[in-house]
Length: 576
Image: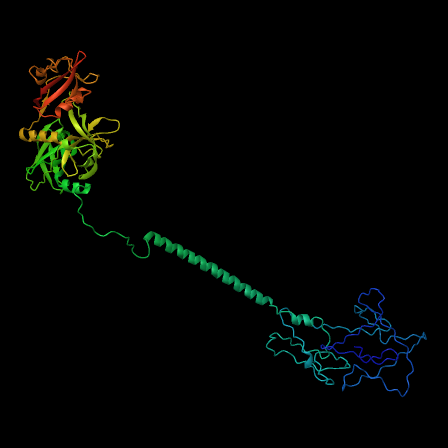
């Protein structure tokens, strides 16, 4: 801006090196270090007064001028001092803009350059980078001014304008504004060119919408996948999978079992076990029995066939499912045994009979019956005790229906409907006839009413059952072994005491009977039978009926505080 202006008197025109961007930097004045703080302002040295130079002296060369460049115009003469003060006047008018940091120029300060920043490009548009320093046109070539720009006076060293970058691939948003041919300084040009490209508001909105759309699609996809997974999982849980499920299973094996196993015993005995349905006298019941021979004789309990009486109906159902009508052969309430016979049935399988005297406590046993009319029910257990004296019945009140049994006790479950069924040993042989159970809160009852088993079952020994069955088949009646005495059933002491009178009002010891012959008297207390202690009159009857008529018994009795031993042969009486 100050190019070509005359300097102070005696000095040539000011010449400064030109920068790559077309601006000129003022040289800092040399000043003495006075220690004074300056806030970026410096006082220029006053120019020396003009001194006369020889007329023939050549002008001083300008060291800053480039060889071959046109010479700068001659310096203008210093302005005159109209006031006559003797001081030099400023070379130009004061700066009306007061451009910082200079303020109003001093009397000798050159005018500061006036900066005209170019228009800032729109937000998001790239700024054209300045051309490199070496791309300027040679000195002396005047560039064509832009059509829209106002005319600007020529400067000392005009330069050709740089080629625009509108076609550059690196500047897709090139500024199409005509370049400034005078290279006026733009303080924002470098920062704008170095700044990264910024997206426009429309581009940000478009990308924001895209992100929201993608997020919504992901959420919808997740919800759909979760729903489908739940449906498929529920289907698989309910239907056991996509295809049919085949669980691992053992192959077919032989049905043969060891003969002494529960299954082997049941397989051998079930064809011989039958179920009885009895109706008559307004009563009915269900029980079990087993085949004694091929002629159709079946052994069961007396209380099973009792409802039939003399004119009732007895139906026998075999294990094969075949049924047949049966008739009563004989019964005995004292032993609680009865025999019925079926006709017109062939191919019967008699059940083998064992020996109850060979049974020992702890031997395994199997019970078969029809509890609650469930035919062919098999249970197992052991012999819990032997020679357990029990009495059952007595519903009539006169004692004629009371049964006295020297029973086998078992823990094999026996329930109502099992009565009359066999109690088998390990060789599938009958060793007892299931007859009574003891249920909770009751005594030993036939079938125990409807209570059910608590593990206390009682069976008539098969030895006693065999003898009674043979008598019933042969004669229709059973004989009972007797001593020929009447017992005091109300005696509360230990043992069985002979009463003071008989049941018919006669003597308590039958004249000419086994007891009379052995010397038993009224009031004697019998304490042992064959060396086994007896504690009541019922036990003495049970022990006696465990023998056959004609068997010999050894008795121990007490009379007047003395203990005596006697022997007698049992007599017989017909049962009812």
